[in-house]
Image (cartoon, rainbow, N blue to C red; front, side, top):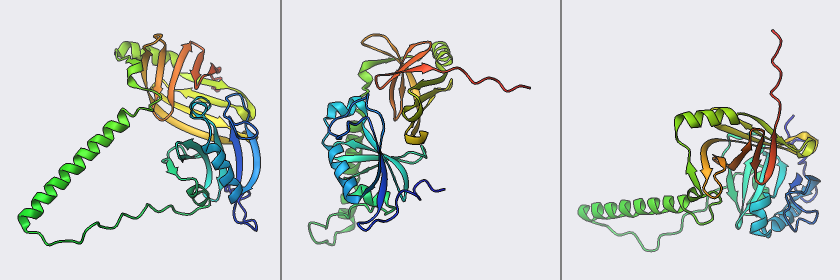
Length: 277
C-alpha cells in the first residue's frame, strides 16, 4: 500500500497530512533530546503551516543539539522536515538515495501534496539589448566567463569554510596510515542501537567505512534512513577517535562497544547468529 494513501484524503479545507514530532516539547516551543516521538494524527494545510511556523522559531542552539524535526506523510510520500535558518530541509524517509530539498514554509505543503516546485523566474534585463561588433562580443564573453568562474570559486570556498560548519576540519587530525585505518575500521564494524520500539535508532558501521543511520517512529515505521561514507580522525581537543560521516556528522568511537552520535550513546548489538548449514 502507498504509505500516504490512508493519511492524506482531502478534507473540506484541502489536503491533510499525517504528522509526528521528534525531539520537540508538547507545545513545540522547545527542542529537547529526551522528548519522545509524538503522533499528531491528521493535520490540514493551515495546521501544518502553524507547525512549521513554530519549528522555524526554535532556538538555533537547541536545534543544533537536539535535531528537532517533523515526520510528515502526504501524497508524495513520507518526509522528514527540519528547520534550516529561514527555510526547511526535506528528505525522503523511505529512500535515502533521493536528494534533499530546501523549501520556504509556504512551499512545503504544496510539495508534500505532490505539486512540482518551479524555480524562481530570472529577473528581467536591466537594459535593452544592443548590437555589438564581433570583437566586442568576444571580449564581453571572455569577461563574463571570468566573472562566472570567480563566482563559482568564491561560492565553493564559502561552502567549504562557511562559519556555521558544525564539523570543521580544524578540530580534527586525519588518521591516514593504512594499517591503522584497517585495524580501526575492523574494530568499529557492527550494529549499534539506542532506544527501542517507537524511539529506536541504529547505526550500522561497515568495515569499508560506510555508515547507515536509521530512526523509527510510531508503529516502528522507518522515519529516517541515511547512509554516508566516513573518514577516520582524532579530535584535536581530547584525541578521541571519530568517524566523520558525510551528511550525518561525527560519531565518536568511545570504546569497543559504545559509539556516541549527537550526544547519545549507542551500544553494540550482538551479531546475528549464523544460519545453520
